[in-house]
Image (tube, rainbow, N blue to C red):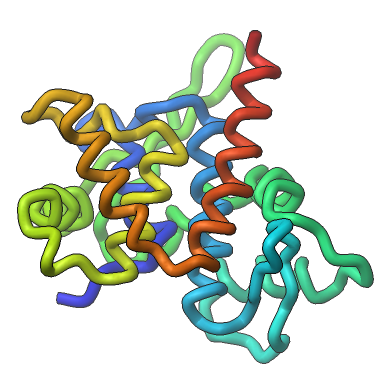
Length: 211
């Protein structure tokens, strides 16, 4: 079975399968999701990144995917060019429901609205738990079989590290898991590493803001 788009896989790894709640802060997960969508555009050859993480579009033809097309439209309509951090901070406010809709159409998750006294919360519990668990199962397998690692999975490992989501793996010690994911991420294409640097900058800014 072909892997899901990067953002879909980050979404699944980033949510609890039973409660549908995010494993990390909403802003943190949304930042990594937005970065993952840029990763999808990068793998599709629709953007390129300079060494200073500035995003350069390589065309405006629709892909047929609402998530990617929305992000690409935003990038193309700007006369100036901006770095990855600026783009993930701009895109993250609307990204989660858009990515969720792709997974809902695949019947992998469902949208559950819970009305509270002060606010309404949205959760995304898994519907097809076996299929929804495939991304993290593949990553776990690659931890023990690095010779089979592909570019998509290496990028996923790098995104998980950028979001500090490695704790969801369980099993081996957190240090061992992180070291294995770091080794996987180090094999990423240079353009992907530039992307990850921009995402990490945005995540670090969130941490500073929370202090």
